[in-house]
Length: 625
Ligand code: BGC
Ligand code: BGC
Image (cartoon, rainbow, N blue to C red; front, side, top):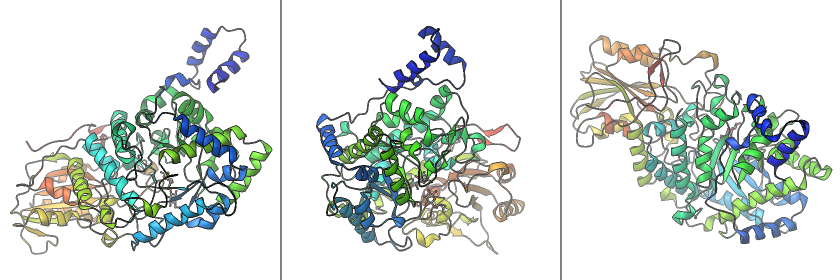
């Protein structure tokens, strides 16, 4: 009996007098009613390969409980050694935001590959018993290989939503997969398919758009680029990585935009608004889905068997791995970071236990022995992990250093990738206001000022070398181009100055905005969306006062209320979080041979200072007439 028919049988038994057809109507009346038929069934392009399944069965049949439990645990690289991986048969490792095998500030590519080799060798070492099963390494490469010094950093998702170009997304996926593969890492926790509905959420910039259709279309193409596809003949090839659709489900729709909060929605709306990215991701064969920290109608997703198992796996047909989020299981009622049979029984196949993996392992082994965790569920979780590893070729590819792209240093920050990122920046820019001061003449005497004018950290935002994006300087982003450097390149015959004292100039560009933040710390909570006056906005006002035409360029992870800035400047451009290739800004703002048209459109409505109203709608964006 499938879970669904089981559910129906249980419900029928509880209402023996109603006819089955009356039952559906009764269910539809309650908001809490659950109906897996709301969700579509989706065929994975990978299909089930009987030979592979037989191989998986043979392996599972030979594994001890200990090894099975190890296989479904993911630990953080700072908290586990290769010896531990061997002794506990740990199935997976991750490097969290800002965590690298060595000091992130120096970039010893060899250390990444050496770490990958050491983890792999340990997982294949059967001297202490057990079977050889390659360990899989996951990372947050959410806008390029952003934990790797010198990597190409693409615009964060909000900017790519503004560009809204599916073909561009495919190319970004291809380039990102390459830069990850060079380090010996197998898997990225991307794309985020969240639909941010309250942009006070600190992860709004990880969302492509508040429009589910844009999120779905762009995620799909990114996954195709990252993983390849059976029909393209390049599925999970050595220059590809495993992708993750995250965070399942409803992360962008929490009340008040509170990170890890509660999403209160009817199931139909949960699907319509937050499920579209998963439909596309599964359709192109995303091999992993990450469970979300948030709750749905008060219940934490990590413990939600209905959504993880009945809907995602049984109904939608997902046959890959549901990975937990960072101690997300520990937030389930009755669980701790080091013990949570509920998450496994609900359908998490690989539990992310960054630090307390050892205690978690011991508790899980015990819970399997007492039957709290059934063998059938454990075996299913193990099977899914083995399936993804086999599809990725990990049983055949050998040591990470033997992979074709391993340690190919020239591919980190490769010029073609940088050119692509710069194009993405050009396409992501949204022109919101232009009183005729743009484009800027190539021969102009130009002042470029503001805290963001010469700052890669501000361009890059969170998830860039460090987790929250703080504590970095331009030196941490080898090979990057700041916005002012871009103007200098674009205006060889002009005069680009950054210090205005005593200088005469024709026009001023003020680059300002948000300082870096990431999940949790970036929430605005009750603070609202107002962008408060500061040295940059005062500078803008002072320039306008003396009659200098001004262009305000906003760097930030979400639209903010800033009527005085908008009114006080002659042109206003949203540049979002463009990443390492700041030169893309001048490409569009400066007139001449290299000038490009504005094509970006708002991926979120721009809030106004009047509560409940919008300054500019979703989809708005001007062009040079
Ligand atoms: C985030 C995920 C991320 C994970 C691993 C969590 O805190 O929510 O998006 O993939 O950490 O770093
Ligand atoms: C993040 C990790 C990060 C860690 C730092 C987590 O929530 O997802 O990527 O390294 O916090 O404590």
